[in-house]
Length: 253
Image (cartoon, rainbow, N blue to C red):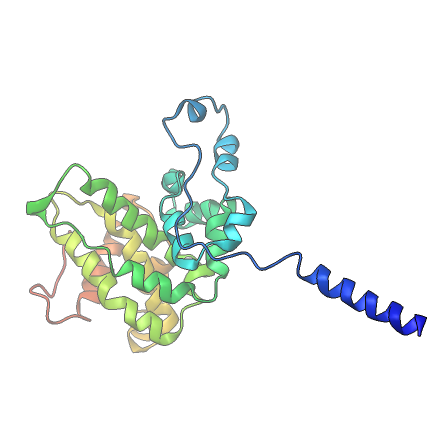
């Protein structure tokens, strides 16, 4: 009898212990970074590593953020522009991803592709006639978004249908930037061309098989080095054929 009572008490203790650590509640609001560029605390930093450390999301917050909230947090990452410090932006974005736990976590979320597609659909390239002082920053954030999407840890998680659904909006954003040469240079849309090439490569269809060398080159390199300029022109001309409803079938920039 005593043994049975002891066993029952032991089981009750185990059950109560399992209730001490409930699952964290989901937080559907983006994280606010406590230290931002330009603040006195930021200006006091003496190394880049201190800045990187200050921008990490606390682990308890990181795991509780919904994927949408996490994505918005990553878009606001204070060091997002660091990737352009590299000659090849594709190398730069890998450095940013590997040094920021927000993007690393985002790349591992199962529902990440769908959330990214929905969020990307909200981007709209400002018309030349409605350009404002904030338009440049907005477009560079769009380019950054396209850049981290193009990383293998992100884009390879998309299904064939998800890749297909992303292409029209991506091309429209590329096309709109190319057409407004007054406000946009290759610096603002080469990231989109790089992403588009990686999508075509993953689809492995006839367009890729017929233009493998060109597409592989654009998919492997993202840079504004003038040596590669013609490569991007040729690729833009190639993919413009995917959308015959556009007023221009050839792109020159």
